[in-house]
Image (cartoon, rainbow, N blue to C red; front, top):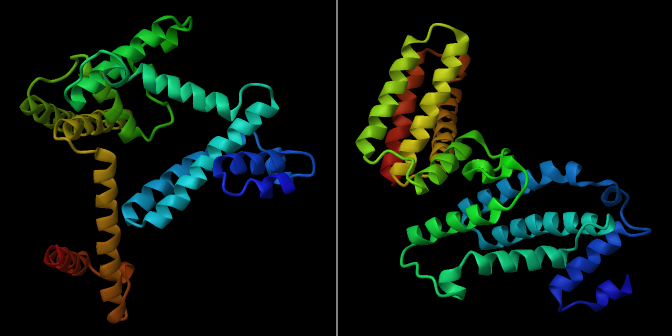
Length: 269
């Protein structure tokens, strides 16, 4: 325990030492019970809290949330070390080598003049890296897209990766037409299964359109969600002033308040 305190001023070494103590004899009972599987939901939650911190514009909050994500890395690396799999140092070394290997335009003789050049080069290098793997499922271009990504973001990444190798609409007008085509197919769907299928196709087409427009569909939808929450909150607030709630108000009444909330937003821009 004293060794941990003696490492003050060496933050990375101290962090690793703290984690060793927590997972060691006489450490924290909860920490000792954790595994890769049990920590999965915490990693996802902490990642989203980082996104919230970025949106807040508060650097202190961001610093804290990034620390929580780093904790997940250190925690899982310690579990791996306990099981004789790998160490935190192995993780850092693997990452350093990967960054050097995938930036030949910085650490080698390759040339990349634009960000798009870099991304195309990155995908080619990743493809070469995977070519020697024995598992066929790991060889596909799209196999690197995490299966647990939120569906909208995953759609964006799939289209992005396919687009980088030329599997893409050459003209944005064709993408708009595809959205209209999918919307039309949805209106003609007659069964629940068909409607589910067509909704999926429509969302996929819209996400692809967002990519062509340079818009992140996940963050765009999150912004829309925030606007909806804010506007509906205003509707509830104004109704409470009249001693009412949404459930005992008419749609026309709520629509008028909704429009008023939108006008207030525009004035604040």
